[in-house]
Amino acid sequence: MNRIKSLNITMVLFIFFIMVTAGLLTSVCFLFFYAMDFFPFPFLTPILSPFIALLVSSIIGTSLSAMVSEKFLKPLHQLINATKVIAKGDFSVRVPEINSDSEIAVLLKNFNQMAEELGSIEMFRNDFINNFSHEFKTPIVSIRGFARQLQNENLSEEKRKEYTEIIISEAERLTNMSSNVLLLTKFENQQFITNQTEYDLDEQIRNCIILLEKQWSRKNIEISLSLSKVKIFSNEEMLSHLWINLIDNAIKYTGENGKISIILYETQNKIFFKISDSGNGMDEYTVKHIFDKFYQADKSRATHGNGLGLSIVKRIVELCRGDITVKSRIGVGTTFSVILPKYQKSEQKN
Image: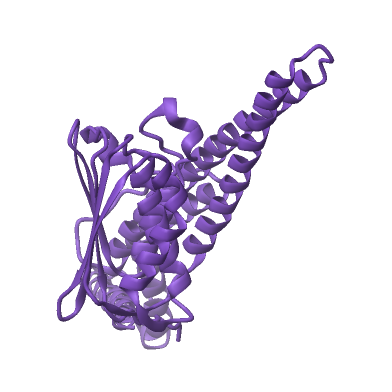
């Protein structure tokens, strides 16, 4: 609102400047005409003077307005043209910025930021579609191939069973991928947390570990727990996805007879959660991209997941106004650290 008022004042001053300048130049012209005895009929001068002054002022004012407004409105014309380009789907366009604190300068700067953000969103959309198409196509091709093999009447019972298990596994992979895509889309379109209740966070984490018992028991993984009694006010269902994805990720990349350590404690206003595994660890590049959609550090283990679990984790933490960090060393293991506020307020729109 203050900037709008300031822009109005600028326009008023601009018009006032044109009027004063036109008046002064008209006065100078009249003095020049009188000095040069330009008026051939002195007795008509008092009658014609107002009309002559109006004509001269109009010509001078119009000329000044044309010259000044061309420079003043040039950034707006550039902005209008750039907006038309944006409307056609080309987000690479930028407008020259002005080095000042004026409203026009702020408008141009914000437009460039918007265009850059739209370009990033479009790039992400294209990458997401391409990655999803690739990830979705792979199990479909696998299912189709092994289904055709099952049509072979000479296929042994052992091979038939093996191919059937592969088809079931790939079908489950498609189901999980579809569920994760829907879940991620839901959280990305969500701007504030709803259905919040106060509950025992340590008990929820224990339940998540029990839900994944089949996975960590199969690999004979030792689970070390250090869970303080912690209460949190948040969406219980949403946070369950956070813990399940983090624990499941640790199980996937922990080898046979490995170890996973889970720590939970609180301070006056914050809750701290840490999960460490004794897996192979990650390099710096992998750590940097670990939360990217469809990114998988170990391509040879692509069947273990679809690269969306940690993207869901990241988005949930953002919704909770928390923070998540990763520390990893090759040959040592990986630690995910999550910091959440105890009480997460819903941001209702006015």
